[in-house]
Length: 462
Image (cartoon, rainbow, N blue to C red):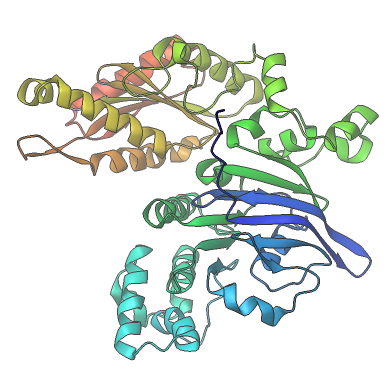
């Protein structure tokens, strides 16, 4: 008899959580499971109960019903007291909305505060830990003497994160980490969250109303509406749902059409979880339902695991059509590996294939859940970037180029090879009304990037 190995228990489990504020039911039977090393995003409108969930997990609130389990140990329930939470609180770190720094303390003192309150480290040891935490969030030691009033919103978020990290938490809780930040700083905070997961195998629970950030960082997304979880699944799953409230939310429209006069069918749909597996069968003709990594071997590039050229062109046609129909910006980036021919000639095609695979992996990890990547030819990749601000497209793509251009590969002879990309970008507009024209324009821009010196981004000229 074959016995299947049991799957590991979730690190954090929220079971039937309920909370009232007076007569108002704020959390109504919340259930969530988060595995070790996973990033779970909770999305929803303001006032929907997202931050209340975090405050229960960190022990700032006691539930009226249900419980919270950490490593199969009950850490919160109606019978628990706040003091009972002290023994596990150090396993959790929290970045509060706006960072919640002490205005009267400088950066170094802010970061050192939990160490002085909860540990017996010497001043020298605390200084070393503070320096390490600053480096981990991308800040230099010189920042220690700055006051919170001298920092931008993004810098405050990094300092708040460093303060949480000094206690070496297993689970990080983020309350609107990108709230009120500009798009560039938002991207940097998202990259930081992903980096901490990769470096420290850190488990994260992120509350946000920013669906683009959720797509970018989340392994799973849960959506709260009126105190209930109305959806839980992957970024690809949430894009596929037919729930009208969710579709309106993720499209960013301000007015929810069902809010005033929802008909009976919409009201039923709002309360139902969508069976994604059945949904994909019913709408298999809808080419916009896809995962960032192509799962069908027939449409998968054998070397990189990314989408192959035939499937890519099929999806690109649909993406361009969607862009014109819904008036949402869409960009195509064609990426060429610089001097791959010379690398193959000098190092052999086996090493050349390694370069292609590593580039594919970097590109895949650099895009959001709303985007997709494909390997078209030996040295050519394509990225389709949806809902990307045309005014910021250069900065967006150049950050992707920089991530790849920092990659150094070591040959069997012990040589270090620096790999770079030249990227051409074209926007779907009146000059690129179809997929073929968009591909042509992006390739022409890529050719100009190579002509102008390589390792650069060229956006289609006006």
